[in-house]
Picture (cartoon, rainbow, N blue to C red):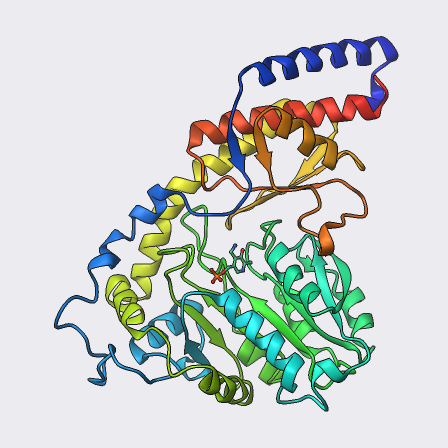
Length: 423
Ligand code: PMP
């Protein structure tokens, strides 16, 4: 059934019911926030033991180097080896940095802009136009970076198994297309993971720009909502086998594993790409926070320690995701006014409402004391051409608040839909 199947009288009745429900919602004077994908304090508490690590007198890495001092730009072997095992990659291809992978992404783009990367004919600032492929919906902070540098952002739709790779293969024939954003596992905001077929084609495709790069932002590599962990294909090896060893800049971090803002970030790539990065990183600084790297290595113990911790996160997050699914299905399923993703991991659910009503839903929710991420935020410059997408982020509020907020959002979706139909 869909709203369109209702006759005029039925639609009027539904509109009256929904308006009454919305008035009740407003009368509750709620103050709820579903905006950003931050871990809850209950999740952060899981890593409190980190605050006492590495511990006085425990200040050397596995080779006996004092982690309290300057140096070791690539990060300590203790955490690099452990993390390489988590991701299933060769530790020789992995650097450990400071707390933010987003900072590294900004470096990669801004250094390519200022100096060119190791395959560039000239710095990107000297190119007439730089175009960047943006799968949508995608991560707003990615788009903010490429917008900041004035790149022309070209969107491609996310499909069920990754971005539309047919479209990408066409776009990269243009030499001004220099790269692409990606969140390959449990993507932000769809929760979709790229299939091996998509990955192989991204690795193998010929690009007109010799310095084309894919930012492989694997922010949710182990962020399952169940006991099952996703496969993390080793794109560094896959790129190399496909004859494009320098294709991927592979990022990850422990931001949503231990502490957001005080974790460890990682960059994996080919030897040439890492040499280029490290050369400039060595001008920017003397070395990363190795005390924190050692604390993390001791806290995790081994790769299985990471998975044990992630199962605890899943125990906290899964009921919140399940509540959203249940409410959406229960309140909206019968009316055909929305579709939404059903992720098995990550931090978000992507909700598509009737075309042109996302902003109205956001506004109605706001007036009822429920703050949602701005409509369109998952598109470059915040412009969703169909005006239908909303990103739901259930991690931060407690379960009761997630439930209350979502029930309210469902009312707003229905109200915006009946308004659109003129009821
Ligand atoms: N990438 C994605 C896709 C994210 O969702 C986030 C956090 N919202 C980040 C990167 C930020 O990572 P970091 O804390 O390592 O900078």
